[in-house]
Length: 570
Image (cartoon, rainbow, N blue to C red; front, side, top):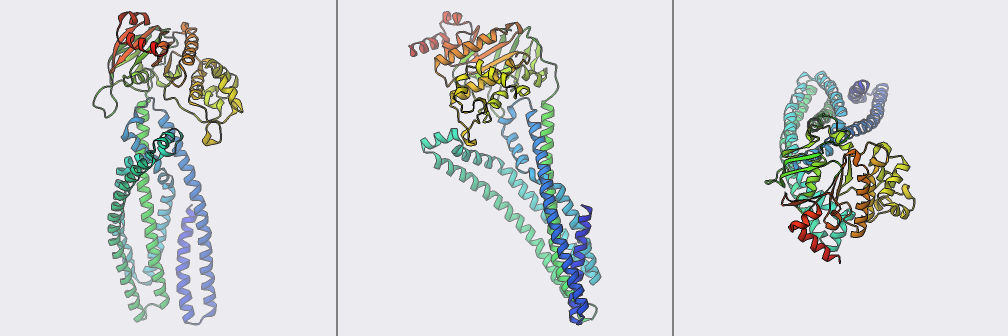
């Protein structure tokens, strides 16, 4: 790289001198000298072309390597954060978007630094040649100072504009995604709302574009003034050279050289300023990256190991939870004890807080008030990675992982993702064998129509998600301490749902000696009646608590809703 920098400076000197030599030799009719000047210029241009190609290839290679490593480190930091509260918090998402979208500037920073260094060396050579023609011409370099400050001001304006537009562009992108992603696109097409969504997205884009245009115009105005001052300096330099030629102290070749050097000086200044802009932008990316690293390190604090077996159970002590930027709690005053080996059902209307409570139990949310203990130890003090390793289950918003079927299921236990017998056993225990039979290549079937594969139905996706949740159990990992089933079969008919839950609960009860707690959420009361304890949530609070028989005898809200559902399915 040092050779390229020195070589570039040498090329600039050779090109300038060859031009001066060519003009003066032609005027003096020195044929041999003209040929020498042409040869020198041709060689310099050839070296410049080859060096430019080498630089371009090295730039692509270096940027690709650095950007790949940055994305890898960023993803590792994000995945190490034990909770998911941050991914539902707008300011965090905006900052992560800035890091991701501007990652190329950080990847290009090493090369931009080298470009700046090469341009500075070339500037020195250019200024040296100007001084050789006339010492006063070196004042052209002084005019770079206004350019530098104008460029810094422009960078600040544009960065502020991009930062302010992050949320607008994120919303615009999401609105367009609603029209092209398979799941929402069906509803958008059926309702005929595509044009409305597109108009709203376009309005957001225009708002962001207008703000950036205003910033660019202000930046251009600042830079235009500095470049006009530089142009005036070049004109003054040419007048100085004309005076030198008139006095016989310079040749016509020197005038040609000054014009060429002034043009090169302008290009070199632009290179330096552009490189400094890239470095400054990369500095912002570095700030975002280190912020993310600090955030992840603070969140992933070490803790005590999770217990091998639940002894005292899981207890919620006056637990409250409020989402970031919200004004009210969605859960308040939740106090429950989950006995080892028990099956606990949580029921309630939509918005009662059932899924939020599940996420608190699994540790992906942290209580904003009160605390949760596991065998008397605060859950917040238990190593999050170790706790997650002892959990199993599936959420109502389960992931539709469009990989090979065996990978989609095997991700439930990454260590055994290539263990086909374990994957097959998990599929069988989840009652998903019929799903496998319908796939053309069985476990090796690619899932997802967008990837040239098969698109399972919603019910089939749910069965595969259940199979994934069973991977740790069938693969010989330590049995789970807590099994969570958050509406995992909502798309199935009531009979199939009941059969699957019955099968799953029987599996868990056989692991009672390990002290596992099963927590299930369902709107269908005929399913939850099999639970040992039923918790009824209402407006974020525990309204009722007891066995099915106790709640029916109490004649409260649970009994009323159960009777309504029972009559509906007759």
